[in-house]
Image 1 (tube, one colour):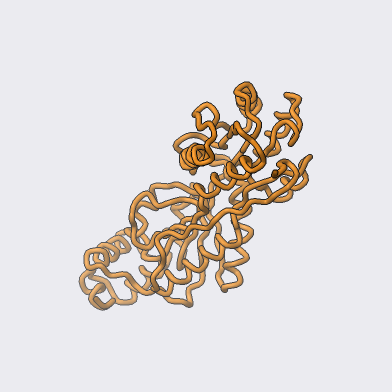
Image 2 (image 1 turned 45 degrees about the vertical axis):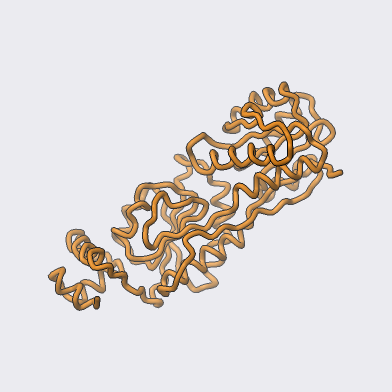
Length: 319
């Protein structure tokens, strides 16, 4: 189907259809909806102009969804990558997405956000959306995922502690069950413990926010752990080290510790912490490449998975 036919069936001019597909701000909502309805009915997906270089980055509103540390590390790499590719960037908090209806943009990248809008993205925007660190809840044309391999990360951390001689490993996962990657990480840790032939007991894998770490680590110590893995959170490793010091436990002599990498913090802890780290530059490059391909109308992988890295420091002692 050609754009002329879309215009005829929607009862508008060709110029109006063009403005709708380029998200021109001066188009009435009812006309925009009518044009998109015709396009969906006939399976028409416009090829976006490569001259349109405005990209929206959707980020969590930090007071509502506390993943700001992760977002900062991804954002640093992503903004650099998009700028190198000639894109102009507008950042929107996820609680202000109604602004998408009034701005011109050629694609969007969402970092660590879950919102019902993304379930019906193709019904409102005929352009690519790249989800970073989240899987789409359903299959929506134009929505793609770039994420780090959480299961591989759990195996990496647990396997490293096992190689360091730990035989009873406890874990604290930052967050709340049902949100983000918490449940995926929990099942991954339990599976990794089983693969190592170690105790894979539910009480050894705790889910908590940092305010509760002291109490939760006390429970793990009473369970007889000799290794601790703290994943997620802006400074989970630092809080865990503080909690262990309160209980009179030395790192790594009494408890060996692996945490999630926090730039400018993990390496300066005492002792410097062994961490797992997402490859933020690789995630950003994959997201930008997917955006490029989507704008050109090329095939884009529905999901791109990037492996984690282990950064060996002094909080663990390999055999």
